[in-house]
Length: 303
Image 1 (cartoon, helix red, strand yellow):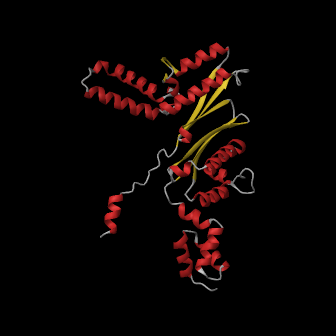
Image 2 (cartoon, rainbow, N blue to C red):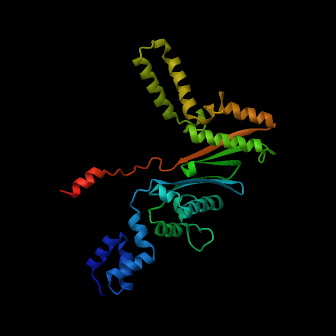
C-alpha cells in the first residue's frame, strides 16, 4: 500500500467523499492524491458530495398529468440562473414523470427508481446533473394523485406549482368546462395560498389555538363577556375564509365562495364535482437561505 491513513484523511478533506471511497481511489491511483481526486471526479463522487452541503433554495416545481395520473415535484438548486437551465428543467420534468409512472413510496424509493431513457437510477442521474450544472441539486418533495381528474398549473416558470384533484361523475372528465374549473381552482390556490381544503380539514388543535387567540384579542379589546362566544365564532369563520380553499371567496366572482362556484359549475354540467385535494409547492419555501454580508467579508480580508 503506497499511502497511509493520513493520506486517506487528507483526500477526504479535499473532496468531502467518504473514507471508503477515498481509500478505493488511492488504491486505484497507486497512492497519488492528485490522481485519486481525478478518479473521484470521474466517478462523480467528489463534486456531488462537496456540493451536497451547500444550500439549495432555488429551483423549480413541475406538475404533470400522465395517463390520468397527476404528479408534482420540487427540485432545488443553488441559483436562479441554474433554475432556468434547460437541462435542469428537463431533469425536473423527467422526475415528475417517474413519480406519475412508478408511484414511489418516499424520496428514497424515488431515488432508487430507473431514470427515463437510461440505465441509471434517478439518484445517479441527479449526481450527473450536479457535475454538469455545477451546483448542489436536491429532489425535495413530491405528491401524486392516481384517481379522479387532476389539473396542473405552473406559475412564474416553476416558482409555484399546483395540482388540483377532482372527483367527477361519469362523462365529465374531458369536459372543457371542468378543466377550466380545475385551472381556476389551481390559479386561486397559487395566488391565495390556502393551507387546507375546507374547514373540516383543519386540525382540532389548530382550531383550538385560533379560538384561544380570538378570545384573548376580544377581551383585550374590551368586548363584553356575553358577546365573546359570538365574536370568537365570527373570527374562526374568517380564519376559514382566509385559509381553506373551499371557504375562500372565488377570485373571479368574490360574491360567492369557491365551494359555491364549484356547485354552480356542476349544476351547469348536469353532474357532480367534488374537490378532493390539492398540493401547492413554492420553490424554496421554508428553506433558510444563506445571507452573505459582503461588507463584513471585505473587512475580514483587510485585517
